[in-house]
Length: 471
Image (cartoon, rainbow, N blue to C red; front, side, top):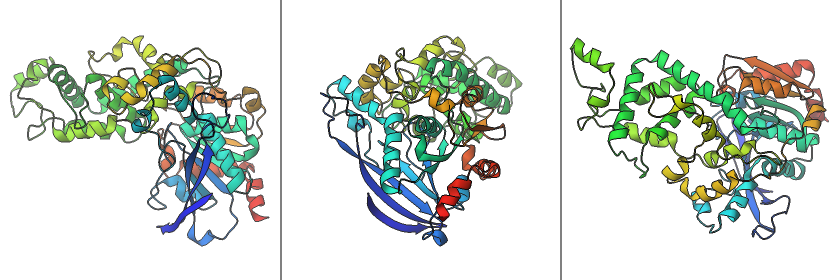
């Protein structure tokens, strides 16, 4: 372990650390050129300034994603769970392997591979089994081998289930927010539950902002009749526009979408067709935008730049998206989300009103998006892969005695609440708090983690955690 820096930001003392971990914990990829290769793992430790010298229990934050780096706090109020957790814990914020300040994996990394199979084997080392082994190594070597508390947000809840399957002795208590995977894992089953939620969220958006039905349709007609390029050179297609729906599971996503389309067109007042007081014009609007999407209509630069930012690759998020559902020996995934979408013609880009999609990858993304193209060959190989490392142990989870407290968001668009509750019904010592007051990002407010913490404390699930810290 190397301490890189220590400093203060408002309301907290911070230390930056780095250590080395093996790329391949199992050492079972002979001939791939990875033998003995080490990668760096970065992690940040937070503490309330007045408690720096106290023996505090440690809380490990398991970041969402996949491919998500740890949060970068601005102050104690910028992320609600941090404010509450600092009252009780020393917090560890790791950058999962391949992200942030840990050894980074991006498009440039993938261009170095000439063999798609070698590139695919490399990518497989950035999934749950390797991530959890990194953290267990960190616990044993840098945190006195004392069991810690975990907080898993979204994909971090998937990692929690892997941690409890692989190293339950390392966890004293666990919290999850919007992130209990269905076990056994089945990507097709997941998407058959989440595509209807994508449709429902889109319809809720249009119900709140009915004027946006026409604005979105007009944008699509422009994309169908004009070649529109984003600043990075990518083509903006109707399919890519639909992926803006990835935001619909967060609040206030409907408002963000509305204000995005509010500035879609370059005419000065932001209206679709220019000034008009004609009732006939209002009536004509209902017949569609195709006849009015000629050379006089242009998408604004601000709109195009915002769309590019919102739909561009997030680290390893898209390349690893479907593979988080791969557990042991399975039928090849073969683009599970696309196969489910093909069953649902209402998601076609030619349908109106246009439906948006969320947290689903499609083959065309790895052709249209410049930053994803270097991943395409490796992802194609992995889509045909049938053997993966095991990440869940159903029998061990059934016998679990680590207190697990989960926030299940009833209307969660990304992780179906019914599937979460089904899994939790088969996990020992698990407790669910079901709420429809929050979306998938509820942990970032000031209520969710405090509620989970209070429930666990009131049941006595944290007595051992704090007793050990006092010894």
